Image (cartoon, rainbow, N blue to C red; front, side):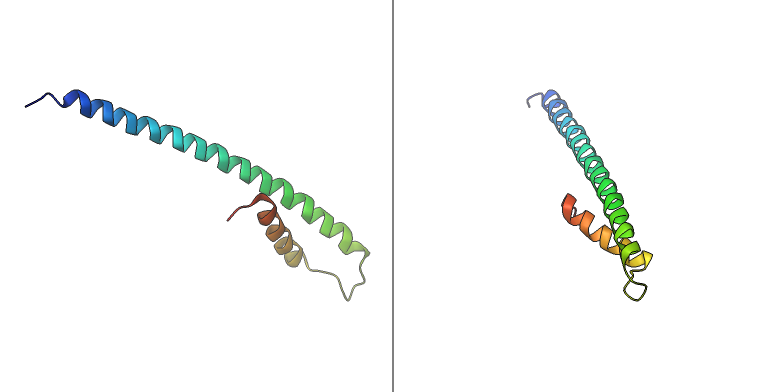
Length: 81
């Protein structure tokens, strides 16, 4: 039989290396999307609050409605599924 111990070690090291690289890329991409979401959510929510102050009292949005609309728009802008 041939000595396959070296091939097994090389194969496992390739697999472990690729896992480390893919997890690093995934975490970096996720943090960028999270930052994008938070930034857009806050700016959209502040815009809704500003616009809401100009509306009549019968037409005003509640805080929950403004938060929900801001969250939806931020998800779409950052392309988060």
